[in-house]
Image 1 (cartoon, rainbow, N blue to C red):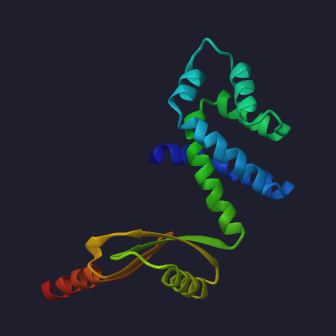
Image 2: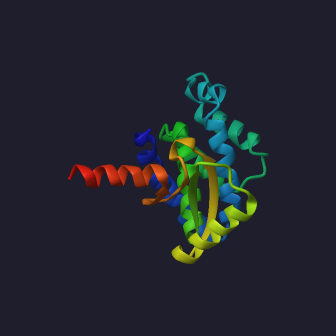
Length: 178
């Protein structure tokens, strides 16, 4: 999977620069999300890989599936992706584009693992605390992980804040061993 992300990165960065310059981040986000869904469908992958269909036929099919009313930039993007055999990487392109878009808009995604379900007030408190610490708007995704025993574990990009009982016990075990 890392290979597809590596392939997807230049496409995502190029589309992001184009969308930012033309002020169409929202439209590109929608297009890439839809193309990503198509790229994850086995039937679409089979059609794209089938030599019976020309690249222009596949491009027109994808444009039609997007609603037909797309810009020339989108058509050109689809043509380049198909020409270079990168259709399967579109899910990665979409994911990286969304990350770049969120960073541009001053937003960051946080994954919060909790030992127990959190109510809305607790989620909002955690999100606002993280926003204040990171100086960015935080979009929090909360999951329940009973292995934590108690507390929470927050992951924001490369930053991990482990305030769980499991983390404290692991730290204690490490300090006792040394």
